[in-house]
Image (cartoon, rainbow, N blue to C red; front, side):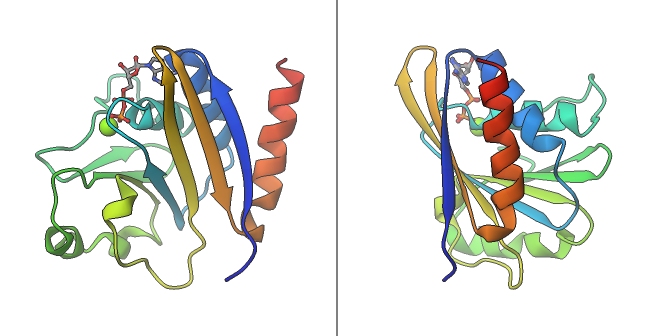
Length: 162
Ligand SMILES: Nc1ncnc2c1ncn2[C@@H]1O[C@H](COP(=O)(O)OP(=O)(O)O)[C@@H](O)[C@H]1O
Ligand SMILES: [Mg+2]
C-alpha cells in the first residue's frame, strides 16, 4: 500500500460544500474513481452537484441519488457515472459492471463502504463526510501520491478564500 495523503475541510453551508466540490471537479479527468463515505444527510449528493457544475453538466440536469435507476449518467465535459449503493446488496453492486465505464469517464460512488471490490490500476480518491451540526460538515479527502498535486491545490485555494 502506498502512503495516503489526506486533507480536511469544514464547510458551514451546502453552498460551501458545492464550492469545494467545484474546485476539485476542475481537476478531474476520465479514469477517475471517487469513493464517498458518510451517513445519510452528510452531504455526499450535494458535493456531487458541485462536481457536476465544474464538469459543465447542463444546469437543468437532475442530480440526485440514483436510488431506483442504480446509475445516473450525466453528460458533462466527460460522462459522470453516479452510483449510490445504499440499497444495493454486494452482488447487485457487482452486477452493475461499474468499472467498464472507468476509461470513459468519472465514477462517483456514494456509500462506497459497500464495495468489496475495486478496479485494478486506478488510485481512487476517498471522501469522508461527517455531520457536525445542522449546517456544518467535516469533509476529508484522502488519496495516494497520485492525488498530491490536486490536494495541494485545494489546500491553497482554501487558504486564499479565508
Ligand atoms: N455544510 C453542508 N454541506 C452539505 N449539505 C449540507 C450542509 N449543511 C446543511 N446541509 C444539508 O444537508 C443535506 C445533505 O443531503 P445530501 O447531500 O443529499 O446528503 P447525502 O447524499 O450524504 O445523503 C441537504 O439537505 C443539505 O441542504
Ligand atoms: Mg445521497
